[in-house]
Structures are given as C-alpha cells and as structure tokens.
Length: 129
Image (cartoon, rainbow, N blue to C red):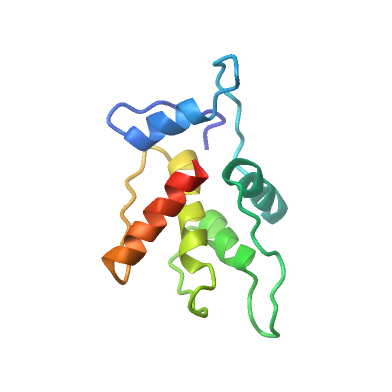
C-alpha cells in the first residue's frame, strides 16, 4: 500500500482525496494505512469525523468496528445483519472512502436496496470529505 495518495488521472475521487490530504501550505500529507483495529478507528475518527463503536452491545454480536475492520483488513465479502438505522450504510461509506484512499486506483460501485439508500451512502461520503 502506498504511503501517499497518488493523483490518478481519470479518477475524480482520487484527485479530490489527494487535495483533501494536503496541509495548509499545500504540502501532501504522508498518510500510512492503518495496520491495527485501533489505528483504523483513530484514522476514521481523525479524517472522517466518525467515531465507530468498538464494543458489542449484546452477547454473541459484533461491534460496528468489527464490520469496518473485516472490510478493511480482510477484503472479504460481508453480510451485515443489524437493526434499521443501526449505522450499516454510514460505516459502509467509511469503508468506501478507505478503499478509495488505500486501494487507489480502484473502481467503486454502490449497490443499495433502493436508490434512496445508495444516495444516502453517497451523501455520507460527501459529508466525510
């Protein structure tokens, strides 16, 4: 994984992220990929303004951070079963941005249960930027 966000011609989000990760003087910030669950939580909070719960609430359940970590570190297909309004789409937006940053160039497609849900994910991504 790259330590820098490379501007990729033709990848609008990658170019935007490259600018987004500049300091006040216009210098590109060195951003290393998180390597632990805790580093991932800190990165998401610092850069996306999102605090992801680290502990499960119910026995035999997983914490929301477990979902994000499995997506980021495992790069596996995931099935998330949670209550309505439980943050699935919000955390998926963070996972989408993480892929755009650390796996660029990449293609990202959003497939939601409805247009409204897909649009909500896109709105979350824009808000995090």
